[in-house]
Image (cartoon, rainbow, N blue to C red; front, side):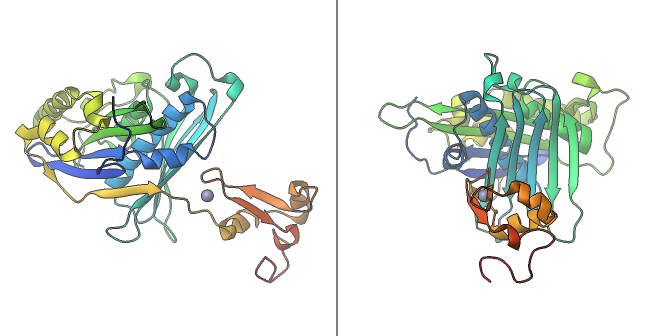
Length: 331
Ligand SMILES: [Zn+2]
């Protein structure tokens, strides 16, 4: 495969709709975003693969939800990979890029020969939506199930949102001679349009008693959904992630009989929202005694951002419950 260089549609999400079948979707391609996220830590390849998949899901889902601020996806597990966390920050103005950040924590001595998804043990997949100040955050949780992170996300949408949803994802390291190895990811999301009164059949037929897409639609909806999914089944990895098929061409290839309609492309980039102020806020709940335990031998409190590597070095007497008024570096 030869896809070392930057391509015009890298780091973009293209929204589309299949009007006749009441299905909407997204095509996403990630490249530089993944480089930026993965270079923040020295992750094992299996952890990198999980972060690549999770970041791609975050781009696809984040662009689907009408967000004022932030969508977060989280995996918490008892396995070697204990946590994967991603955030999607909606653009503050139209035409600006959305920002994505991600990181994983893992026990390096427990990473084993099994495939990347099996490094996640028993646990849960969570979706959090924060619309910003003065709104209640939303949280939905489903158990880890189905053999991939995209299967977990499909189960979440069927179970928590009654929205039939399907992902076809591809990700891997490019291996062109003469260029540095780097990660690329591409994928398609399909989702049935929300219904005023969702159909729910008596039983859930998914793993662990979870609902699946075809448990929650019937009649024409189910027929349309199955037909469009059969079309998506024909996609191959190189079409999703390789350099030769643009997102619009991919939609024509897959869904021309469904007359796809495309909307404005959303660009995405790596970005973090950490700041000294946020660190100070998160430490404001601690007493001087607690802070003493966090203080280094140099007499300072340090905090590292796991997402972007930024390091904050603060004076303990300016922090916590008993912080001196007007304290801080700008005082
Ligand atoms: Zn940061």
